[in-house]
Image (cartoon, rainbow, N blue to C red; front, side, top):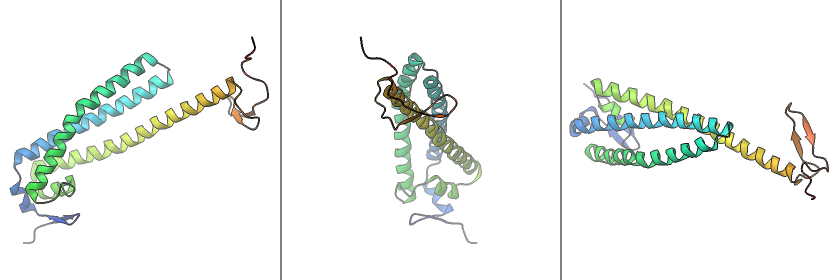
Length: 187
């Protein structure tokens, strides 16, 4: 009977390879990946809060949130380190490089409940990372628009706008800057 093999980046994984891996390492990996999922979910929530505080101009809560993000980022580094060390150990057990040690390769040599759990975890991670990319893009776009709007506002307040520049009113209609300043700087 022929056994299924998986090739990844010049390495072939066979179901028999799992016998070289300590089952406790698989359990530890699943635990680390669960913490990764929790971390991504928390980051999604933080990005939503960040956008809310920026839109509402809530500087006090925004500063608290940024401090919380810094703290959680430092705390999460230990989980990342554990994942990298474990990935290196699993790669050594399976006779491949750390780069070749992927969840897909590991999933192909596992069986039973551990394979199902790894597949479920991998799917959640993929879904959450895609969602995180979208939320990160939304946040970046919001901050970019805030920056653009602030520059436009400063230009109009201090009459830095050249006569050819265009601004838009609340109805979205284009309005050209005239030679009058928004603020008279004379005393």
